[in-house]
Length: 469
Image (cartoon, rainbow, N blue to C red; front, side, top):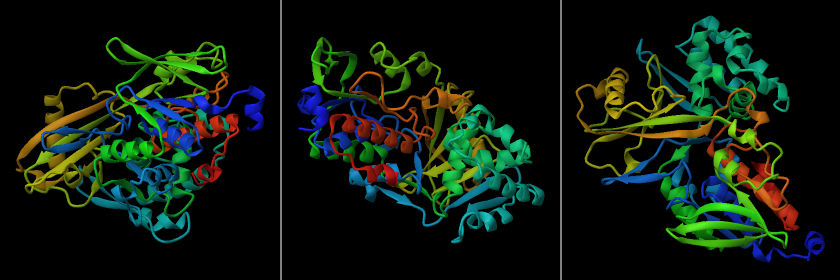
């Protein structure tokens, strides 16, 4: 019996309940189970994976959206290893992104060399055709200023990234063709709507720390194979009880000092789960509604964390129109285009492209017919081979609350994992991980919550996991 357990007179025999089966919840459940805690994981959906999932459309397996990670995302890569899914992803040997300007049809590349930071990007920027010579020179000066920022300085969260860039000589074209090219995809916001603190974290970590940090990784199989199939197998092997189609309706403290979690398992059916530890790994508004009174100092802060949508346009062509796994675009509404042919199971000589559109609040509710009229001509501008190609299918997927909005001031609203209520912890990409709303942030939040929970129980946590992350 540990000191903590002796002081409370309780052993962790009632275990833990993790509410939410996204990446944060799966991570927390696995980390707790790995340290000997009996864990129940509840998820309202019929599957695991949160907002990184797959579904069937005819014979195809479709990801709800294109998700990528970087080599610097060590937490997510730990997660892949933990669920034995490393064989279902690939990572570039070296960063290499084709960038095509639809107006001029000039093609450039953002790539790295095998040189120390920041020289690893120097040759690529020197040749980048979408900026003038003066603009390219200004990028280096801004990057050095960015590298000097202290990410622990809370003042960084009080200003927007665009203003900071403009004050350091970055033209509107430079912001559009370089900073927003990366920032919109990682932050789900333009520089004008992004906290300098979060933007600095993205660019410093991804581009200005290790030469290979920004090498891009992606799933070569449907996301559901990773985040549902392999994750569920890992949870089963760890002894976690996974309850799908199970909605949590309430959490309250018990007289014995533990927690009672009320869940609904179907119409008129429910269960009361007893636990010493509860990890809430659901979105901020749902967390607000489930939090017991007094658990956090100002619960209304959670409601002030905004959300931002992501739109994905899916096009099935009757022939190959894109060479390479993906490209980024300028001078067009199209942002990033990915080849999903193989992972979707498409056969018959066609090609499946997914157009990933971030920071598109003005488009998220447009009818499919209007989006078709908007995007098919733009793809033909970018991809000459698409001109005259047959369209086998066109559809869209929408995540209206895909991420939290990374606006200035958001850091003061994001809570840490520990609440005022003993045994109750918070997880989710929206919590205070220091990262924007990414798969990496979700995994880190689950690790942070489980570390705090295990510490309170007097049980071991592999700190090397978080140190590596």
